[in-house]
Image 1 (tube, rainbow, N blue to C red):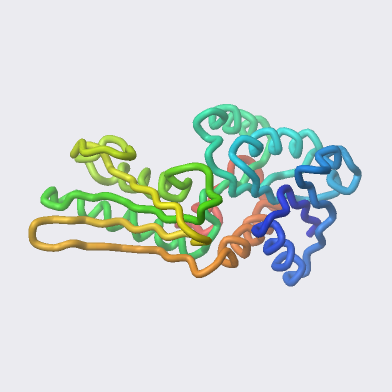
Image 2: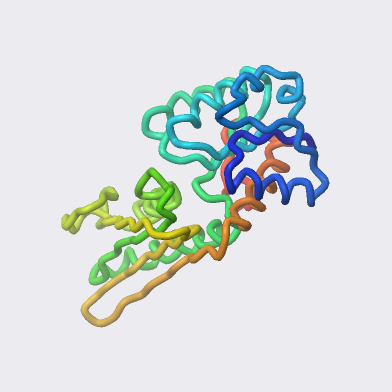
Length: 237
């Protein structure tokens, strides 16, 4: 498979290594200083572009890739509120985006466990639920896209919570706290606390390697599929 990379930071370089190790060819690498390459023959030859950039750049990158006839796999977060409807419309009209807030296989499993636990805990109102996410100091958006996805999984299954929020004491809202320190790849913790005890589930990433592998697996899946795609489609959770 021919892959283009959009964004060539630590994640982009790790994705490159894993893609090559799986027998794929990197035909184009686009970063801040060569945006004109979106129009190159090399970029247009790609089966899929894998995009990891800043929130403010992601949507524009999708448009440029789609204009070149290239499907996109993206792990960029922070663009959904402003451009989510436009992306959904474009994908219903023939464009392809595989988007995930987190490509880690472990996080996909954790997300499934989170939804199942929330469904159980809906029967036990004596437990309050809250979340904490920790990431490296370079991460600009908060809460993380993964935290938002996990929160949505809780809200779908717990009737006593109506929405998520940061810095809240409202018992009807799911509180999400964020911490930025060091080079932490990502830690997500969900706690159910009562007077009697506390139930905690945590996903703690050792490195970005799991994210990078998941992104390449997503690209392999996206090559054969169309529309708006998600981790749930790929793993059938």
